[in-house]
Length: 574
Image (tube, rainbow, N blue to C red; front, side):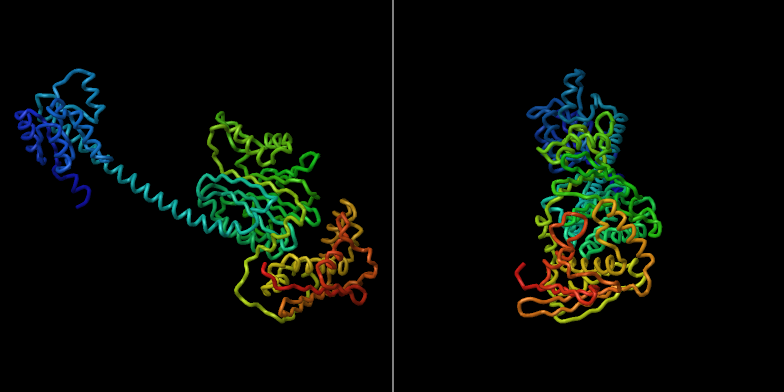
């Protein structure tokens, strides 16, 4: 029987009146209207009859012996719970206070004595309509509640999966502080941090358009690309281009991701950043003015790959400096008057920030004070990164999951990059990937990447492109060096080459990786031991010294355009 058929059925109506004549009259009138009737002579009988008869409407006399109508009404309403069972008081009272007490006890209306058949029928029909409407609304409410609970449950599970993908990096590193206050289980803000194989870390803070699950959809591929390419040693430009292309392909045209990408190299003291659409970040140097890190690009996913700009800015940083970025929920936080927190107020807070608390804590306290009790309308994410000694973060690259596969023990690989490919392709991620097939090398990816990177950089920049390190002795020369590097790369010919030969062998207690790198350049005087030192604090001059420190041996041959590095590793329980 469907709901419409149930509503057309006769109603069950309980009549409670201590007057036998009135009870009989009312019972007769209601039955003639086609309803099923049960009667009670007092309040106690009325409550008992309610339990057994389960009436849909109750007609209740106010004055009855034992338990009066008002007390019986309170019991009946309690027994009915959330179900609407209208109670119509039968009374000849006219006192306003008495009638008000009837309503306060749970009554819904009054029926005056003597009874009028037409009025009785009209009131029963009206309250039946109200009862049916209440039941319908209650069912819809329960259905919405159940579906919302199911949705939240599914989103919570999905969020757990997302967190396992998105937070596999180093957000818990000692130099990172962050705060994220989403508007819902899923939100459009993303924050990733991942150690780089060569040391340092990459950080991405982003804000997808919109809120909730739709805004979070793009975060999954973004996280996979960010972590996958960062851990394999890809450069910031390559990662940004890949993310932009992916988002441009999969997102609808009205969705994109405002983001800032930070590449921190603690060895060289460099901060390389790209800001596309986020509020300006800030570099807080000790005892110096704030340095804004503004947006100069379109957000990720807006334009196609051939129109996307991955041009980055690089600034020098040193221990004690702090970088702070926020999503637009911070400047757009509003107070009770509708005023926005704003970027100017954010800068004032950072300018006044003392050493007693972190910049992130100061900004959060300022937002709380500004908005007071006003609810924030957007996701709120802040991240601050302290520039730390590289040794503090040395354990980060070791957070690499171990594989159950045995991997290759003895192998040799030769790889050559030539001509225009030198300007179009970075071979380091591929070479690192080959080396990482050896399980014992995976937790040493940082050292292996550093060796490959130093050998390749020396061969390409000093050997093939003939760029002198002395140019990097000043900030102006540093910029000239890399501008000239790009120019000479574009004119590289087919005879310009860099060749790698990797040879690995696993023993009982560890293994040995031999990396030979040669180039088509003229070489250099490698007999001058003063060329490189880890004590150098400039922009260059530490590469060969670092290789000597990491490798068992480092041997130059010929005119200096061929070098072999021998890296030994031992089996340990790390």
